[in-house]
Length: 193
View (cartoon, rainbow, N blue to C red):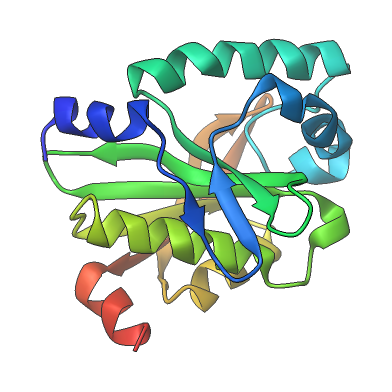
């Protein structure tokens, strides 16, 4: 797949559906729902970004995304509940390497919904899209060591732990060890049935 093909797909962000969720493009109307979780330090403890300082910060961020969505340069879906439409997190590709047919996924979820299998459900939908529609060969995910909850999601999606990159990222002023998990296309499809 070429970069321009990827941009064409994501400039008209496709919606993904699961039993409980709709993954869709985020808009400024999602600001209150996003701020509900993005201002919490417990949510951002193992993420690259700091808590949102105000709802205006969240609105500015969502406004910024509109341009990236239009250009097809943003691969992250808003995770919404099918029954209410409430945005409860995000899930998508942080990077897509079109030359090596590899993607990296990431996710964040409102803690009110932790422990319900929602992160796994969203991540598996994104991975299925990556393998079926983008024809990726490999999908990986990284986590800061200590974030056992995130590693469990990766493993429930069929990923295999590949190792730890010691002190490989400077995050919030501190070098952190990063765990890597991944799954290949044929492994994921075999696991899906």
